[in-house]
Length: 243
Ligand SMILES: [Ca+2]
Image (cartoon, rainbow, N blue to C red; front, side):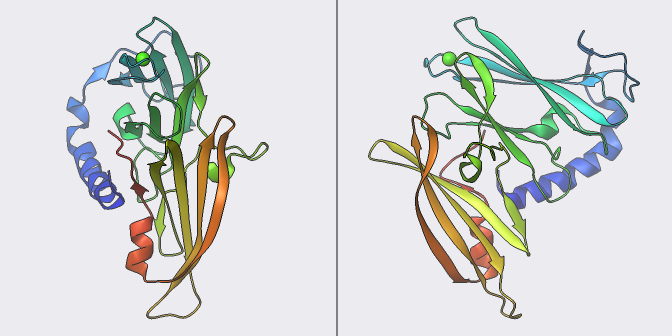
C-alpha cells in the first residue's frame, strides 16, 4: 500500500463509514471485555491472515480481534496460533477518537527482518487522516514481540514505530533489500531547507544490517538537494510488500 493509496483509501473509508455503519459486520465481543464503561457493546469483525510467522515454512494463523472499547481507548488483541500449535496474544490499544475496527489497523504481513517468518504491521492511527502510525510485530522465542525500527533499535530507545512520514515538513521511509545473504534496510529521512520555491530537501540515508543482535548501523550518507517529489518518493516502504 502506498501513501497515496492510503490517502485515497482513508477518504473512501470515511465515506463508507458514514453510510454503511449500520450494516457493518459485527462479531460478538470476546470474553475478555472488562468492567470499564464501554462506548460500544459489540466489537467489529476480526482480521485473519494465514502466513508463516514462526519460520517453519508452515502457515500460521494471525488474527486481530477487537474488544469492547472504553471512553478513552479502542482495545484489540493480536493473536498468533502456529501450525505447531503454539499460541500467544498481545494487547493493542489506540486512543478512542473516532470509530475504528480491526481492518482499519491491519496493514499486512511481510518478511522484513533477517529472521525467517513474516512480520506483522499495524497502523495504530486506525488509518484515519494522512499520518500513518505503523507499528511492527514479530515472533521471538515462541511469543509475539515488538519489532523495533532500526533507528530505535538501541537499548533504551527501542520503539516499534516505523517512521513512514510524508509531510512537507518531513519525509521518511524505508528501503529493504537482501544482499549476499544479509538483510538490510535503509532509512531515508529528509527535511526542507529554508529557501522556498523550489524548496529543496536534505537529510540522511542510513543503512542497517540484520545481525543476531538485531539491526546494526553500517553506514550513513547525506542526502542533499532533493526536490519535494524525490523526497516524497523515499517516504514509503520500498523493497517490501505488505499484504
Ligand atoms: Ca509457521
